[in-house]
Length: 137
Image (cartoon, rainbow, N blue to C red; front, side, top):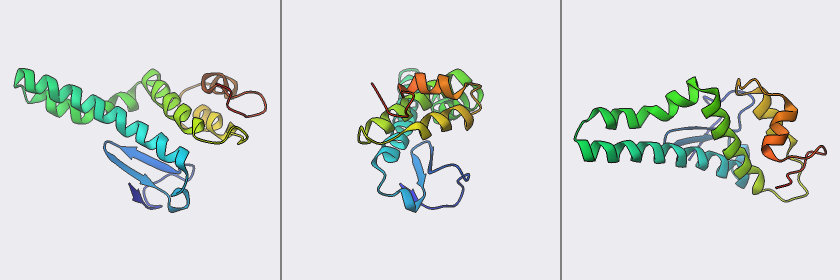
């Protein structure tokens, strides 16, 4: 994990790309945000290792190359994939906060910052956030 304000959009607290995580220094102690970004890294590693296994079984180096970049390509090009990944990461994040913490921000980010075409209400339903902004699994 690298603590920096560089390379991050104003609304971002952190950013994952592959095995690397950039995080704003002010969120250094935010356990939920750490978990969110680690979840992205876990997904990347799973994808990479799956293609590395295919490479090992087939000896075709193209699979190793695909494994390095396919997660990012799918994330960028597929709204369904991006929604699935971000919903999972936000669920992990808000589950690490105390039950009395309002987590409406997660639904707000999901609905407006990822080009998913979903409403705030849909994001709240996906993330199991009630009308008062609290996580209710």
